[in-house]
Image (cartoon, rainbow, N blue to C red):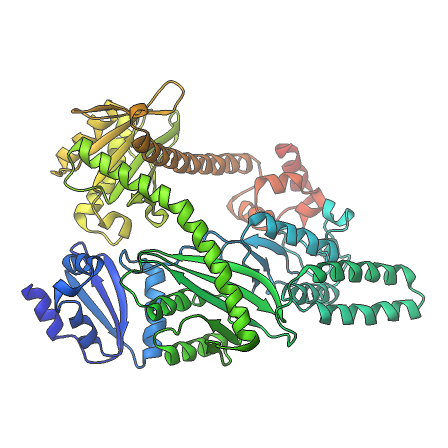
Length: 608
């Protein structure tokens, strides 16, 4: 405690961000403050009045670092950046990043492509969505390509290219810029129309198309006019199905917060050009210690701080904390003014009420789906504690699996479950380096030794900085003994359990020197352990397949006489994979620097 008192004395009385670390040096909480000294001191005052979560956080604080900023707005930006970077255990994090798909148009390319994505990057692309279902996003892309024939391939295309067009051109789903059938100028016009369509600006697109149709008709180009007419019909059919929320054609987002004693949900409805274009559902767990304003502020900074489009107006159900600072921050991100507004009457109030209704329905779905799951996870963790005599229900469980095909490509995977949920940011892959023959036990020992040595050395890798409460190894008692030998060598005492399978490779028992638990008699525990075992097996196997695929690709190209490292790199850079190289024509191969007609024939012959 003396150490903490000394730290508190030296904290500056300025705006900025504070980072709280545990004894291993891992960042467990990031916060911002108008006056750092006052805010940080509050954590250590009147502990009996603090909620359980805050008391637990304070008990784990070993070091506090501060970063001073010029303004509160800068502190807000820095806090959001650090939370995304470190994902501290005690910060509230949105659970939507890998859930909802978006449509991306790579507008930064000469010939942009349209595709599905779950990540938003500041790369110049245009993003539309999100969509609640992948199938809805795919269907939207399908419809768009019938009206606006955009490419979906990964080819690198230059103006005037003469590559062989693919099937999509022949079924009228692509304009074939790769074959030089359309100029970048004309293709760019199609891209602009598609973007406006996705933004809900169908009226603008329709007006331009109608003018173009009349011009074609006047010039006696009836075939082109008919094609435009068909586009107009398709767009009108889609527009009629969209819900119009405003006749003033504004762009805005509607953010509605619903919460109970433990968790919060924020739904966002996207209104573009007065039409409802989509929605996004966001879960924020364990928000019981936060006010409505703090929850809304946390949501807005994380949701709009990762590259999402910010509209000129955002309607809210609750006033966020640091309201003026948030507006200033959004203005800086967007480049233009952003208004945060809590409507109380009129059309805007009707719109936010619609968002609230949607939020209520989604929250009911979430609670129905999560209540049973969360209860079973807690029971499974508690059962592990009871059976194996652990001091507490295991917070952090690490599971290991070896994957190999003989001596070639021996690898391992480590997955991490925290409070029964996957923490994919802490997953790690291992390539076996020191085992010369197929020996699962030796491989397991190498992997555990490398991982646990990193724990003892307190390296900078956050996944290796925290000690596991329980180690699960995919295998029987032999794998357990192999793991225990490593622990003994490192003078560490951690519980190890083997996940044994039956002849059909199904999870069957948990074993160590003191216990042999039949999981068929423990349905709740079986559900938890089977999920962990399946995940670690999937993860290690996917890494093994990737390594094997790379090895095969390497050997296929390296066996071709005349293909050295430079030419191989040029080929892979141009075509992306050996499969694409195999499918290319000799003429296409010759366009790669260093590939002569003679060498192109050799490549085609070698790859079949």
